[in-house]
Amino acid sequence: MRQEPPNTGANEGSSEEKEVDGQEESNASGVDVEPEPETILGVTIYDGNLLFLIKFQGKDEAELVCSKEANLKWPQKVIKFYEERLLFH
Image (cartoon, rainbow, N blue to C red; front, top):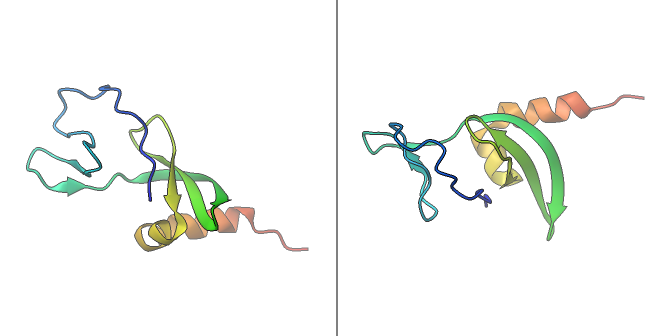
């Protein structure tokens, strides 16, 4: 459940293709390439679903990603996000 920013054409001519009609990026060989998250900026609840605001490498805008997807794909990033915000009293 990702919300993709509009394609600005900033990387035209590179060996990677931008997302087209909901498809993942692919490299010159046609193999799907999953963008690597740079950092998790925040978290919110929308319609009862926990969403992470994630900044991906090579992208200017952050995207909302369902926590279930983030937990499966990038568990160490999610753990780091929570550890940095955990407070003990």
